[in-house]
Picture 1 (cartoon, rainbow, N blue to C red):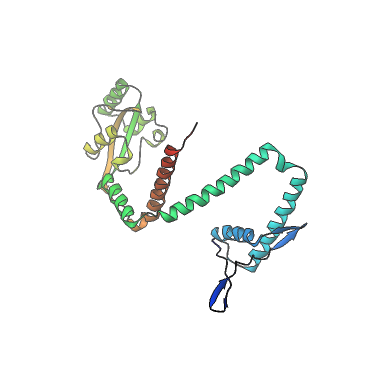
Picture 2: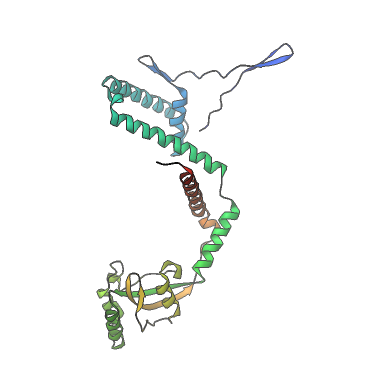
Amino acid sequence: MKIFPSRLAISLLAGFLTLPALAAEPIATVNGTAISAARADAMIAEQRAQGAPESAQLRDAVREELVRREVLSQEASKKGFDKKSDVQAQMDMAKQAILIRAYLQDYVKANPVTDADLRKEYDGIKSRMGDKEYKPRHVLVETEDQAKAIISKLQNGSKFEDLAKESRDPGSKERGGDLGWSNPGMFVKPFSDAMVKLEKGKYTTTPVKSDFGYHVIMLDDVRPLQAPSFDEVKPQLQQRLQQQKVEKHVLELRSKAKVQ
């Protein structure tokens, strides 16, 4: 929450005199130490961001919490904790984190993701997804000979679901090798290239090599892709693109920094 202090302007003769902002009264004083209204406003803003409604009860609760924190902080200082090097290091890190958050919030505000950026990203993802979804099964083994043996068993009438128990893929072996509905972009290229060439109910008759090993792939079904609408995915796209923009900015700053 940004707080803009009011200014009291009075007319003097033919000109105007602007007086400096009047400091807000502290919300409490603990053993002679004042707790500023700005600190209370900051905590209230955090609570409201988490869904708490503005109310007198909220302000009372925040005041009590800040009083308790001040009491504990004073006791910690009496014990000398504020002089301990490890505590000072943590305090420095907390201060740094707050500064970084404020800076990045300002950067995001000054560099928003545009609707044109979002639309371009959406169209790009949609084009990479293609116009079909596939429901494949696979058996993943370590060697080409093992894959050939799987294919031979399939040709001799063995069930794919039974052979999938030999798979090295723990996520699918107990489901008969089923990988669920997916678009080709979700798989490594050798796998997706082989999958899209299969007819429904058919399997690859030669092993498919990838970085994971050798696959035997069977295509259970195929259907037209029902891509979500732009409005449905817009919030997720906005978050992702904004994060990418921030990461790029951080990398640019890092590349310019003199680090010894």
